[in-house]
Length: 212
View 1 (cartoon, rainbow, N blue to C red):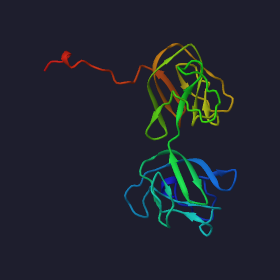
View 2: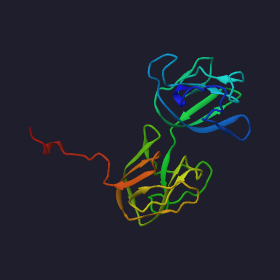
View 3: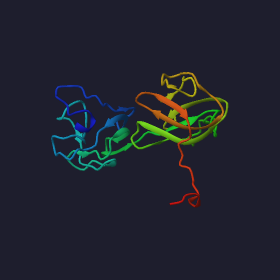
View 4: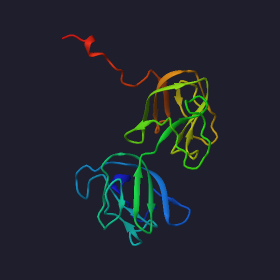
């Protein structure tokens, strides 16, 4: 739809294809653009459809970012961003969620992930759009680390020369070697730019030090 790069000009193969292992639960990632307030011809409206064809089942009508589909109307995107999406075919249930990105490794305060089921990476960065990520303050040790997405190794970034560079998301890319210190961190998932610099956290001030 117009919120996901444009409505299809059939016949065509749809670009934002979700993947499945069982024909029931589908997952993927998509860049979405919020609704501009123009009904029908504007941006920010989406649907799910199957087999690149409007004559096959298609789903719409729910709210954003989660819900079951409930009719033929378009789903209106309320916030632009890069989202992970999960869709269940039998029920029409769906969820759009901003991917989490965290620092993991011996150089981080919590070390490497153990691989335990349900493990959540603690040193997680903040984002409002799934593209620009920040971490206000983190104390790093000398050692190795990477960034990884959604508490799994399916998507991970490495191979910069610390403290700044274009991170490599190629599977098996080298770990990043940190220099001990306390840093603010910024990461742009589109460009791969990863930078460790001055702390970004808000500092506390004593109001008595200020005079009118």
